[in-house]
Amino acid sequence: MIVRGRGISKGTGSGPVLISAAPISFLSGVDPDTGIIVEIGHPLQGKSISGTVLVFPYGKGSTVGSYIIYALVQNGHAPAAIINREAEPIIAVGAIISGVPMIDRVDIDNPGFRDGIVATVNGDTGELEYEPEAVSGPPA
Image (cartoon, rainbow, N blue to C red):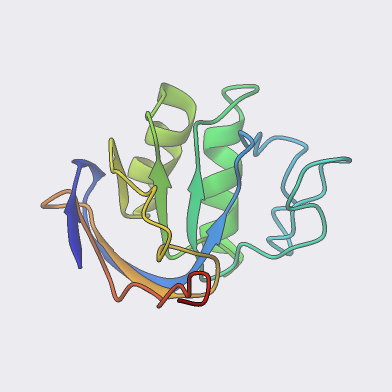
C-alpha cells in the first residue's frame, strides 16, 4: 500500500514501525547515546527508536531537540525515518540537518498499519509504503 503525504526531509528510510499516540520531546525525552525513550510516563518509555520508522503526532519541547536528533544519528541510534501527523519546526529541522527522511500529513489510521510492520518512507516524494497486516474481524 502506498499512502501519500508531504515530504519534509529528503531521503528514503525503512524499518519496523513504532507508533506513539503521544508527542515526543527529544530533549530529555530520548537518550541520545542509546536511542531509548526515557521520558517518565511516555507510552514508549524504555523502547528504542533506533532503526525504526518512528510515528508520532508532533514534537514538543525545546529547540535543542533538533540537535538531539543529530546526536542520535552521530551515535548510530536514530530512527530510519520519521512520520508526523503535522510537522513542527523542532522535529523538521532535526530531521533535515541529520538526514533522517521525514514526511507528514499521512493518513495512518488504517487498522493494518501497526507497530512492527516494515514500512518505507520516501521524503523526496512524501510517500509511505507498507504491506498492511491482515486484521481479523469477528467470526462470521
